[in-house]
Image (cartoon, rainbow, N blue to C red; front, side, top):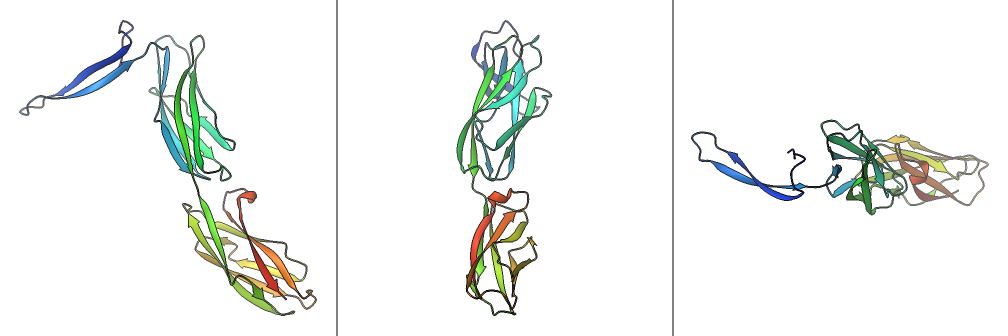
Length: 232
């Protein structure tokens, strides 16, 4: 839809006709809003994604003849969300939002701003909805006994929430003489095996070790930490 310079700003109702023979003429109404602005930016009013994902949305950019290059930016982004825009072709650009897994779920208002030299900015408001994503970890059993100089076996059960990546298993806080390993260490399925070996010199007592499950590509601080008491 194009509007000449002489068209009065406002709302205009037009009818789209189609009459393929021998079908009777049919019509559909289209409402066109003509704005007095030098540039316009249009987009859907919502965009939704999950923690740790990338979301894309089309942005329509219109400019009067004679307006120079139009740049796009996103204002009001929450921390750990990055926005980039593709070069506009045929009056369209793609906005890409890279949402960190550390962004809390919620609704975040964003303003897409179009700027060009010598004219007023144009803006479009939308809401970014971030949905929870991640993993739930269950240790089976919840605690393990092991003798000095012996080994024991447990399991790590992994439940994914809107997540389709592999999960990396690591261990923290294991004392000297107590070896804990996950097989496999990178889990594509629903569980991994824990192999616990205690050296003969491992001090007796309860040792709280931490099993860390981190989706591949996520920062370490986004990992799920679960304490496994090991009684030697």
